[in-house]
Image (cartoon, rainbow, N blue to C red; front, side, top):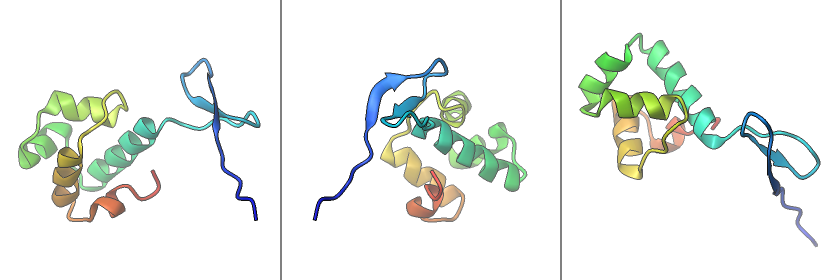
Length: 95
């Protein structure tokens, strides 16, 4: 039995998102993760400054992660998950 895999064509659209082979666009994982962090932060009713002070990370760096401009390390991912009191897999849910 052959298994099918979904691959990207290697091309990007004008917005910089990868395109699936059949022409379907996918959003970059960095953007999806940033959107997830943004939603969680708003749900917690925290500003970026408040959150980063609690977590002990640089606000500018966090802001770049939230905007999808930076990719965080596993160590920062762990800090974020502990701060939101959830597992790393829960933090990545839907990303």
